[in-house]
Image (cartoon, rainbow, N blue to C red; front, side):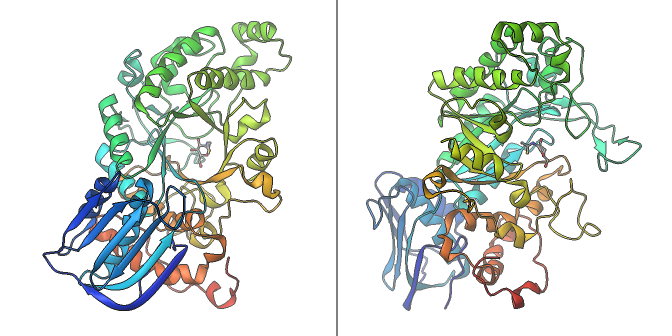
Length: 504
Ligand code: TNX
């Protein structure tokens, strides 16, 4: 008997014998986190009972996500600290899925390579119903991700209820129409169907609790100072010219930007105060990507801010904006994350950089002593094509097939070991301009998320493309049972023959 596990564990020993599963088998739980683990395991089981003893406690490793799983002819034991127990259940669920009647005896001793293992979902460009968000979180937990980055605001929709500013969702959560086809197509065509939706604060609490029970941290993103036209549509005074804007109906880089006058900060601090209270992780992503400064250059209020702050170039207002918001949050004990554009200015103390335009922003930040999460669009952008453009559904562009995604290595070779310690881990991003519904999200996410999961969890020396391909079909087999869509594997991968190295 064999088991096929993704991500591949640090240590797996298959042993002689099996454990027959019988309807009388019971799951018992002891200690902190064990109940959550037991409950999640029950929700994953389809077959008869299994005798599993889940016990919170120390293992071979002091890592909080380490666990030890043993299957013997007498039963199954899972030991670990609270986070580790959830990761162990993810492993056990894959084993049981593949062997529902008779479980092979084995020992797994496992812990992650990286502390941060994330996925970002854009719910602004297209909304995702609450239940589907929770189902996605389940799949993340199954692959041992520990962070869900929720991109809640952008030009095309504001998706989180803010009690102080009700128009953000009354107005900002709805757009009149959506572009049909690719944004580069001329002339532009629209579907003339309103699109929208938002999460109430109760919805947000529900998602956070659901994720917490699976030991997944939810990080909200409130994108600023660009990517904010939906907020400006709700409150026109947030733009430099105070003009009436609509929630944006196009894709691409927008010229709209929050004005840098003080009133904008009063607004954003009010928003952030409510956001902080909803997310116990006390971590907020403040965006910072793709800022167009044209409106600032022509705005008397922004000119006045430049004079007051002693800034000579309009571009410096970007660093001012990010710095002021970061300082506000840091002062409240909140950890701040921003996209790598923020490295172009003075980095606020303690900020974590998320490197998306490539590895360079992350390398720069690590060398400057800042923590980094690698999410380069070259490897882990799940909105990019994963196959032939002729036959794949319309996508934004790019090309990252499974092989490319699997080759994602978060630690760039040019960093010294000291600098490399700042690389906390990595993240796959799913932007949704061209991905309207959940089945399509799943099609783009799986199995590329399986590849990212392994890049982030498995020890460097344990990663092997050929071996990954061998394990994948069995693991993917569980998805349809849960109603989760995925992209079927390509028939023959001719790279296999020529590729003898352990990494692609
Ligand atoms: C760039 S990645 C963006 C997003 C787009 C994405 C499309 C990043 C921080 N900004 O606004 O949706 O490209 O791939």
